[in-house]
Length: 416
Image (cartoon, rainbow, N blue to C red):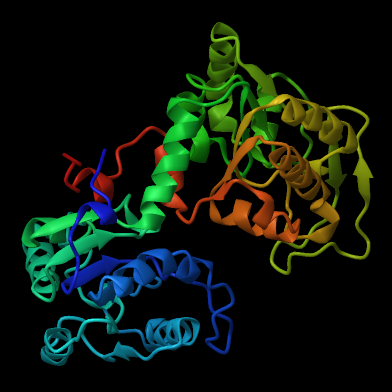
C-alpha cells in the first residue's frame, strides 16, 4: 500500500502536485471538457485547508521538448482560477526558468502556481538520437523541479504509466512523496475489480484491433467469468472461425492468435461472446465520418457478412444477447466502443449497451469504464454520471488491465 496525501504533514509546506491537465480544446483554444481539472479539486482543496503552497505540474499534448504556443497551459490556469474563485499564478516560459523558480520561492501559503507545459522542456521525456531515454537530461530536469518544493504528490493517473522526470525522477529529490486523492481513488477501484471482484465478473472489450488488446485479453482471461468482444476486432475472431466477414476490417496476421485465445477461453471455462448479427454498410466516408447518400445500411440475419459490405456496429440480436449477460454480472469493466459510434447511424449498439450497464449499476453492480473512446461513448449515451467509476487514465488504465506495473506508482514510498 502506497502512502497517500493524508499520511504526510503538508501544513505550511510547498507541495509539488503532478496533475494531468491534458484536456481537449476547440479551434478557438477553449477547453471543451474540464473533467480532468475537476477531478483534482479534492487534492487541491485539501492542501488549501492545510495552508500549503501549491505548485501544479502538467503536460499538454506532444510538443516534443519545444515551445508550442497552442499547447500552453495558460487557458487552464484561467479555467482553474474561475473554478476555485482565486487567482492562479502562471509564468509563460520555461517551467524551471529563473522567473518560475522566483515565483515558486515567494509563493505564500494558500497560493497556487501552475507551471508551464512540462513537455516544453526537453528533459521531461528526453531521448537521445537513437531513441533511448537520456537519463542525465531527465535527472537534471527532475532535480530542477524538485528544488521548487518539499513534498511531491502524484495525482496524474493519466501519466503514471510513463517514466518521465515529473512522474518518477522527481521522487528521489523531495523530502516525501505520496498519491493524491484522484490516484488513490483510481487504484482503489481498479485493484478491487482485478484482485477481488464480486462475481460474476464481466469484461466488455471493443475497438479496432485485436493487436491493441492482446495483453488485456490474456490477463483478463485469468480473472473474468465472461468477455464480450465488439468493435472491428470482433471480425478477426469471426473470420478465424471461418465466418464470412465481407469487407470488414480484419487483421489476417492475427487469425492464429484469435484461435489460440478461443482455446484458452475453453480451457479456463470463460464465457466468450462475439456478435451474432451486425449492422453493415457498403459505403462509408471515414474522413468526414458520415454515411454517403447512396449507401445501403442493413442488419444481418446472423453473424455472417456478405461480400461488398462491412460491419460497423453490433446488431439487434447481439444487443439483446449482450444485455442478458450484463444483467447477470456483478462487476463490469469496459474498454472500447462496439461500433463506429462517432457516426450516429452506427452508434446504437454502443449506446444501448452503455444504457444497460448504467441500469445495472443503479441496482448495485460495480462498473468501471476507461479509455478515451469509451468515455466519449458513455457521454454520448448520457450515462457517464451513472457509472461507478470512469477512469481518467487512458494508457494507464489499459496497462493496469494488462497487469503491468505503473512506474509512476511503483516509485512512490510504501505506507508504514
